[in-house]
Length: 103
Ligand code: TYC
Image (tube, rainbow, N blue to C red; front, side, top):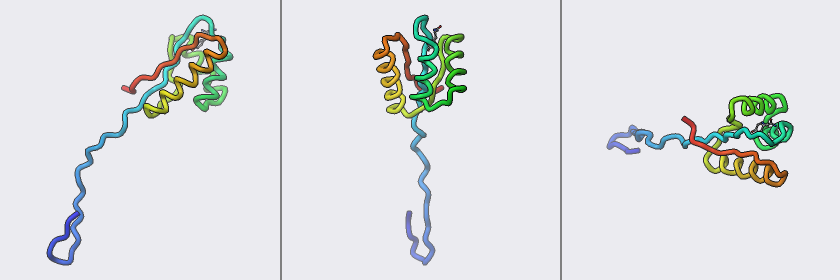
C-alpha cells in the first residue's frame, strides 16, 4: 500500500506468492485377513463416511488392492493413519494404511 501526494489512496496488490498447501490422501491397503466389516466400520468412524460409501470404498480396496479414504492436510492425514493403525493393532488385524501427497 502507498499514498501518493494527492488525496487519492493507491492500493497496490502484491503478487500472490504462497501456493495452496500440499494435500495428502490417506490410502488403505488390502490384505487377506482383516474382516470386511472391520474395514467398513473403520472407514465410517475415522473418515466420516456413511455405511453405503464406506462399503463401496472397502470393496474397491478389496478388488484393486488400495483405495483413497480421504484427503487432508499433512498433519490431519498423519493423524488419520495413526488412528487406523492403532485401531487395527488393538483388534489384532494387519490392516495397513499410508498417506501420500496428492498428484
Ligand atoms: N480382503 C479382506 C477380506 O477378504 C477385506 C479387506 C478389505 C481387507 C479392505 C483390508 O483394506 C482392506 N476379508
